[in-house]
Length: 111
Image (cartoon, rainbow, N blue to C red; front, side, top):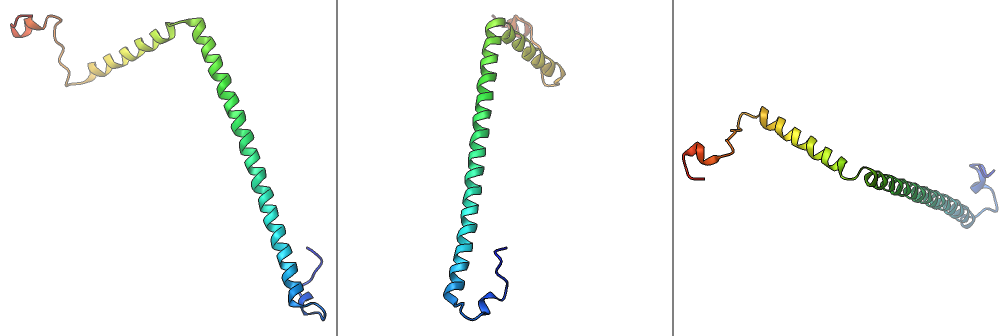
């Protein structure tokens, strides 16, 4: 509190101009505080974004090194896992018909 009580505008010698000036000062102080808070929050968010980007860059660097070490074996493993998943989905589907490699044999048509 500023030490001014609720009766201060009623005291003799304090005009409405003075009251407006005090109120304007208080409003300006509140706006300045909000501005400081906004800037502080923006600086915090900026720092968080920088830290996050540095972490992402470090992770990408680690992945690159790992891929260099294992070569294409991880990619081949992922391909085999995807093929296995596709085969399992097809095997459990009722709408899949398996045809022999020689399609002409099935319909007695020339290959």
